[in-house]
Image (cartoon, rainbow, N blue to C red):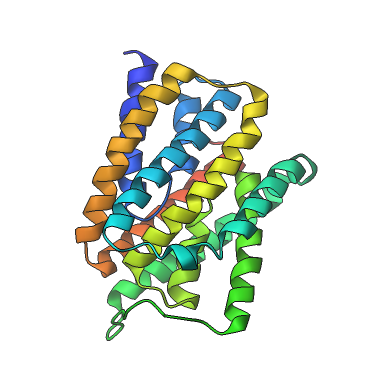
Length: 256
């Protein structure tokens, strides 16, 4: 079968699952395309474009469902944009293996914490906080900048880091967190795409075909998330964090 059609089918399934948790799916698009025989730069640039399409589509669904607080989300945007740009610039000067091993530790811990919430009793989610103290907004700006740098270095949208931050520190409801994160990922992905446009490694037929697939998949996933209980969403996101960890371990040990 033509690798193009296999790629389209694979990214379609990934976009459904990841959009349910406010994620773009970029960390899986790249290895899928690379394993199908596409060049590394082509896989990365296509992945970033698909990540942008997924986040845009999911954000529209979440916004229509009242799950995107744009004013709150905008606090993350300047830091994550600047950080993503700087991360892409300094990526050639930092040993990526050390960063990725630290990332693995975070993913395993955050995933376990997410899954453990399923068995917690009496943890009923309330409404979105109306306002925060000044120190929390300062923390958001600093945190988003750091996430942006990591996003630029790893080539992902950063939602995988922001969701736990929103749920456990900002006390944001799970569904609203997915909506806000999908909106933030638009900007980190956009700046990533802009950086990789300079390589010229763009496969237009692949981007167009796979782009249509992820738009449809992201719409399905986002609408499914809106109907799911928050507890199941946390468990599902925790499993995805572990999948990321396993993927990184396989890469670091040269088994993938």
